[in-house]
Image (cartoon, rainbow, N blue to C red; front, side, top):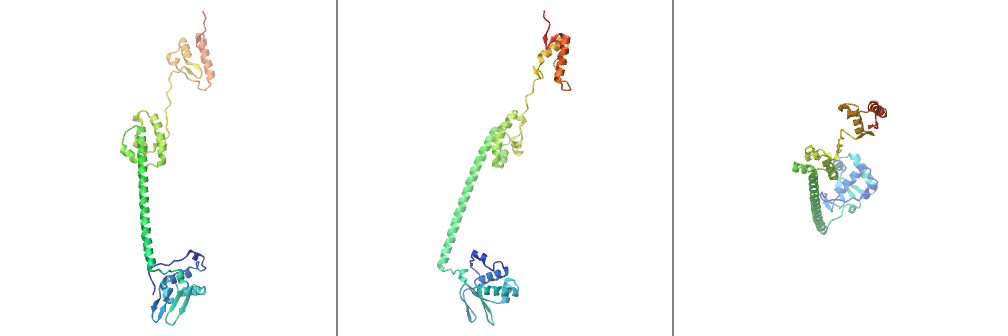
Length: 289
């Protein structure tokens, strides 16, 4: 007695409907809309109009999986507020949905043709849009690959240790784009700190360990064991004074501050001894002929 294909429409204003929060009443009402005849139908000796259908409390209870009492209460609520009308005979019950056209618009053959045409056009538009998106993605990916390739070549040139280029490129291409700036900035400094390539990491190790995040430690230039001055003392003059005083070579070039760090006292005592032994003052000959 009812159409099992097609669709019905329900406006969002149903959210404000008084029975919307009552799940049982709402469920029974929706079922009535779905079950109603799309066109007039003949049944036994009667004509069941569009928007109506033949049923019974037991049948509704079985179809909706609600108790007979729940179904009866829901039908009474819907009848009182005018959503449906219920006509019962000694043989069957006919339920009619009020304003059925609000939920189900009759579709003519012309409408069907128009709908089919619109669906075809929608599919074409969708296909075209998808193609454009795919092309755009391909172009973007191609551009990204060129950028990565160029940045890698720049890295390879700067690093200047040509080992395992293919593996290095594979690692480089998987690095997040935001890291590339750090790499290009770090490599020249790292290369400068390791002028001897044998002590420079292999490029694959550098990339795998993310070494661009490491601190660059540059060794300070070693100072000469012999300095002309230390802490204000003329070491050449001190050495000459020690030679004249007869100190051994192991003492002449030795400079050890006093253990208690009282350098001034140590320095004064040192020169006092030299003056006493050699008659010199601050490493200069005090004798005058």
